[in-house]
Picture 1: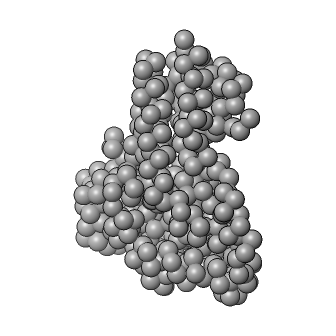
Picture 2: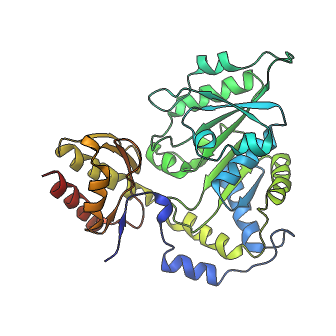
Length: 337
């Protein structure tokens, strides 16, 4: 029985056509700059998002870290959301490896970082008591919620006014673009750099791309090598990422629809549900029954992440079709009957 895996959109398997694209890819040594498939992917992402240059890297964590280390120096700080991935879920890499201090800001309910809170967090120029505020980093989507387009313009204007660089952790940038009905470049255009993940909803097996100015990407390329991220014949993976960009962007709307259908079904059971703005929703499982629920669903071939707390995250993706979604809904209904 095929698993219906709602743990994350990182669990997607390459499609047969994607695998064939990888097998037939032209390859070279990427560290030496002569892998044609990697170069084509980098050029494409830079062009389509409106940047001078781009760099293909093994993971979104590394892509964000390279951006932070490219924008900041030792003793600098970046403003970041309290629950942002770059701050909370990337091993403290900016502090550990970049000597960059995070200044966390509490998110508003819609995932934005209030401008007044950002303004209050910027440190006085020239005062040696403080780390130097150099960068503002946002995440889009945030817990599956696209950031409002007008807020991105406001935050960009604030960053420019305060002399800050502006970075986007766009791990699910294309989900945000599809949900907002705009090209990804319209969102990316507010930022000095953007990290976009290819191995989540787009379904490529591995990799992210960091896009920005030529100077930033040149700096990031050096840090990638220092961090052990230089790779050789990566063109096979780059070709699969190309296939994902060609075929799997518009279909993200299907994942969003299925997340909405799942949210509606869970609400009909009397459960508290947050989200389903894109492909992510959160359901509150009462009475500490998460482990029991996970076991019951697993018997039906459905996987969920039942971790700490009553709030369980569920994520739809290209490996979950309508039949699989109905199997998951039936499992929830039987458990809570």
